[in-house]
Image (cartoon, rainbow, N blue to C red; front, side, top):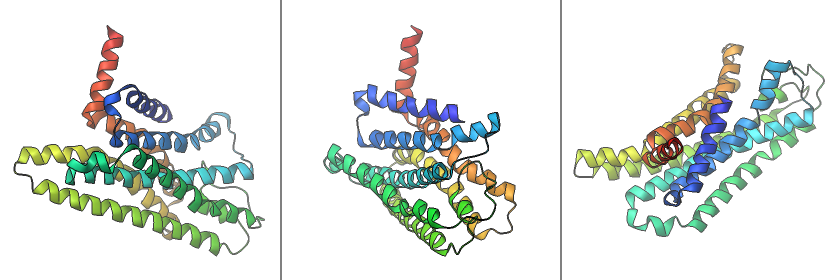
Length: 279
């Protein structure tokens, strides 16, 4: 899965950089998603593989908090990028004549900067709060990476502040992002249904298919993992661990495959690349 994620996301970056015709907002946001997926998967996979291959089952507490920060901040950034992609599709379908004037290169760069700053700043207090608690219980967690709520539950102190802050950030980020995505797609669906022919409706909706698949692959496992950790006390531990791994490993692997298969421009450039090599 890690090899597919690395190869797939680097291929997306290479194709978009190589082809001037793909230098558009949609593909810039796709490159942001690819970079985010590379960092997110690399923050957990090397250590995870060392556990299985070399039985390296220890991690320094500072390194654990650093890993925790990267996981949460880049997960937050991923959600923001999905909102930006939904906004791009909304403008492209509902107001196509103004698409190039609204989503200029400086605007895309500003959106990217806002996404990065939001993720970096909102998550920053979480590792600092985790560090301040006294840890006098076991130092063993049943996960392959430093999952926040599992780590702070090892503290022999009242961790309500950590728990409430992380819960607030999660609901604020996911709640607002899902709301904005829903608003965008409500407008998109209205615009599509107003088109005169079935072929036109299907063709236009097809341009959103990749994004919808990525949204489902990203949000459903993440929400399930998040909610079961806090409220699913009767859920078996091995299921907790499985879902916690899946929601971080699956999207970085699936995203380039989904966009590679469903986006004709990327698929055509990839075929041209292999055809040239073959000749």
